[in-house]
Length: 368
Image (cartoon, rainbow, N blue to C red; front, side):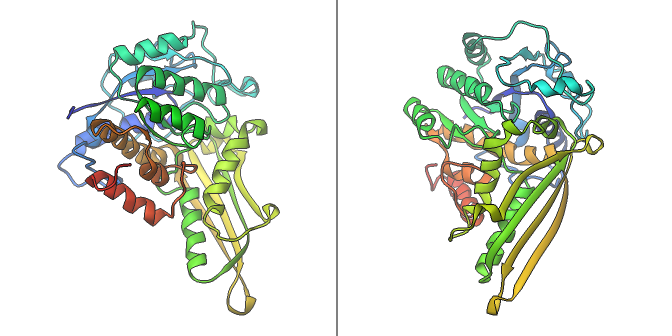
């Protein structure tokens, strides 16, 4: 078994920054009690066994710079919990723009928005070549919400290069039968779609929903409103980019409810952009239902988290599970880790079931 997991990244934003900081943070903390990990060991792989071997972005302040510098460049604004990142010798390459640059960002200050680099974009053939030459095991897709063409571009590159694909964004690839079959036929493990946070709005909303259902409450209405100040929320001000994101988040909750609920009584999705919040995300959740005797009740909850470390705490497990599947010669969608870490997996399971399935996968009891 290879000691290292060689990872490529498409989109060197806040999530990539938190993930890379975390690799070095936990390397420093090994053999010392450290919080924040769902699994310290997955099939013999530790967080610090991950190394970045290739990266793509489209921002002028990142393209051409070493990844160790790019993760701290604007408009990245997440919490820095590990500043001392060594020089990696991996320069950020110019990605394929396609639909990855929302035009409305031109109307915002450069410290808050993307600044499109004036550089030659890597073609599909070049991306495939880089993935092969860098001996990447896994590519993590962090392109912006709504960048449907860009997400599929990197998925296709992985197919051609024989590299595992982890789709952290709400473009339906792993949960799309046609794409899933392509990866299965190629024998390449894939995980997706649309990453859940470690303890974020979606998982919290799901847990509350499941609690009410198990206690016999009839759910009538629910909403989840999210605000934040990072480029993800700025990007999502363009409502046309939100179709799959809203569908992903909504189905993550409604898939638990065993009876029909009027779509007009469910509102789940990003709501607004507040620049000074930076990478802080606020979620407001409300569930209305009826108890014994049809007596009404409701739950209101406010959740505040740093968005990108919350995501990285999950991605670090998905990466190691993808590598474990490679080691075992398993291809196609990994149903267990997808259900546990993603909002829109190929098959939805209750969270306790998904966790149990992941433990069985890690132990080798379950194939995928």
